[in-house]
Length: 107
Image (cartoon, rainbow, N blue to C red; front, side, top):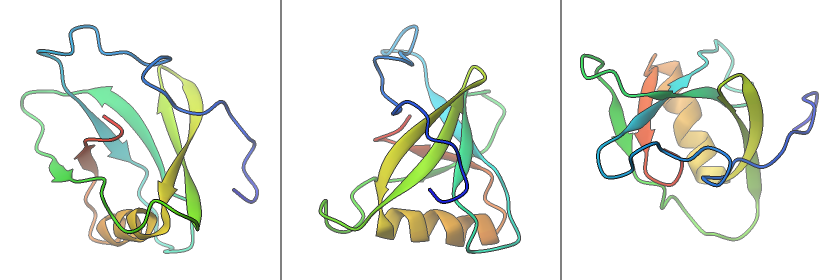
């Protein structure tokens, strides 16, 4: 990510769910007016009153090019590799002010 400091890779090992059978969490996207800004989000416990969109992670090839998304969990920033097509989809959703997302690979 140009301009952003490198951080440890995001992993369920670092950010486990307290009770995976019952708990859910969502991404709160950092909204941006520019399509060129890197994708950033916080990962939060799901508030049952909060509406969110769901997105499958299978977007495009698993091969290069890869993009890096910044995820913050409990004030710790992590880097997470995503496909270029998922990066594009997230930027498009951000344009339409979709703020809360559940993405199976990440959440």
